[in-house]
Amino acid sequence: MYAKKENGKFGILRILQNDRIRSLPLLCIYRINEQQQRQAVTGVFDTADIDTIQKLCQKEKMHLKYESIGKNESKEITKMTYEQLCSSLKKGIYQVTFSIYRQGEDWQSLSMADQGFEKPAYLHLKGDKNYLELAVREMKAMTKGGAMLSGHIQTVKCRSSKDVLTDLSIQDKKIQIPFEDFEFEQLSETEITGQIQLFMTSSVGEKRMPESMATLILKI
Image (cartoon, rainbow, N blue to C red; front, side, top):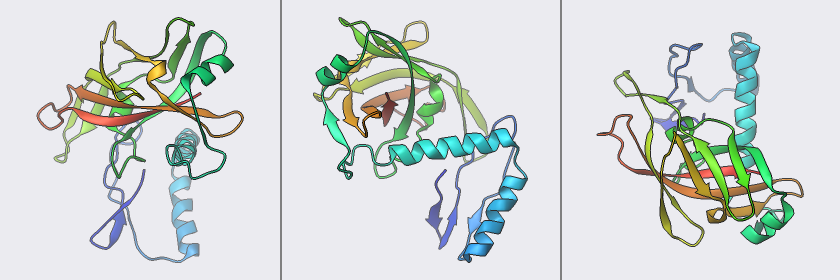
């Protein structure tokens, strides 16, 4: 999670609930020295179980890797074509990790739609038809008033690398995103990512949440 500055203070403005954590107070971090920062972090880790700590560290590790995607600030990051990538991959079905980020200035924050699909996803490489398969699942969101809402992704569209908008049908709670519609970047000799813009609607608070755009980032 990323803290935002409001009224001169930094605070985590939204906390998703789960079976382990029912509620947490707003955390405000003032100007404190390095020793006080360490003490605060130590207190958090002392009260958390090892599974929670591992999940937090793993998620932050993924964030750090994805922050440079699309910016090409590093000399190691190079664009790849769909043909180049397919020629280097064998046919088969691969489990792949992915995250869905908000669009706009805050795009490094996860979109609520990231909860709307099972993980990992499955990359199908058949030669004549290559696609990423996502399975829709129920997701939850909390309103500002503290009410917990649940629902699922209802419609999905994708914008291809050629700027073509395509409707993706949901069949048996699964969608197939054409692999050729992704934009690819090679971060290193062993790390390749693909990204694509998605336009989605959900049954979670329909009146408050019309169709919204997000970026899916796939790690190959």
